[in-house]
Length: 373
Image (cartoon, rainbow, N blue to C red):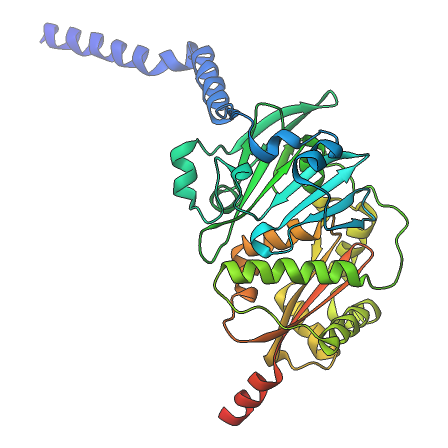
C-alpha cells in the first residue's frame, strides 16, 4: 500500500511538471524563428531570367534611324498627344507593324507580322509552345532611375499576357487571343513604356503618369480609323468577319460619347462619377475608368439606341490605343463582346484620351431579327 501511494505521488509530480513546463519555460524563440522563416518563404518569388536579345528587341532604345536603315521608311507617321510619334509599317495585315518613337528613339514596337524578327516567337503559336522554349515568370523586380519596382502577374496574365525579359533590359508582352489561345501580337518595350502602360499589378513602386500634350477637344478621326483597323485585324486572325464602318456608325459612336458626357447622372452612380473624375485627374494606367456592361446598357438607352442590337466599350485614359485593343482581345470579359460571328457595324469615337467603341448589328441582320420575332 505504501509503495502504491508513493507511486501515485511520483506520477502526480511528473504530470504537474509536464503541464506547467510550457508556462514557465515557453519556446518563444523557437516559435518566433519558425514564424519568421515561414513569412520569408511565402514572400519570396523566383528571380526571373532574361533571354538572349534578338529580332525587334534589339531596336528598343535605339535611334529610329537604325530601324529605317534596315526596314525602310514607314507608310505613315501620326502625332500623338501622349508624347510619342506613331510610325506605321505594312500595307497588308500580314506585314503590319507599329513603332512608338520618343525623341527619335524607339520605345515600343508592336509586331503583328510573322517575320523572322519575332523569333523565337511566332504569330499563331500557343502558350504551351512558349513554355517549351522558356519559363513563364509571375514576378519581375528591377530598378529604373534608382527606384525599385516589383511587378506581379495574375494567373490570367500568365496565360494570355505573359511578360518576357531580354538581357538588354527590355521586355516583351505576348498577347494571346482569348478565343483561340493563339499569339496575336508581340509588343516590345523599354522599362519606361512598361511602367507607363502597366497592364499588371504593381506591388512596389509607382506607375509613370501619362505625359500628355495639349489635346484638341474634337473627335480624332485618324485614331478612330487606326483602332478599327486593329480590331478588324484581330477579328480576321480569329476567323471572324471584319466589322463594317460607315458614316452612320461613326456618327452614332460620337453621339453616344456626347450623351455620356452630358448625362453622367442618369448613367453613373455618384460613387462611379467620382471614380471617373479621379481617373481624369490621375491620368495613369493604375486609375483607368471603364464603363461596366450595365452602365453601357444605360448609355444606349439614354442615347436612344436599341440595346438588343448594340454593345461596346468605353475607357479613359488611353495611352496606346493598339495595346488597349490587344488587352481587350486577351481578356475574357471584353473578348466576348468581339466574339459575335454575325456581320456588325463598328463606330469609334476618340477624343483627347477617351475612347468609345460602338458595335451594332447591320441593317440586314436587324431586319432578319425582326422577321424572326
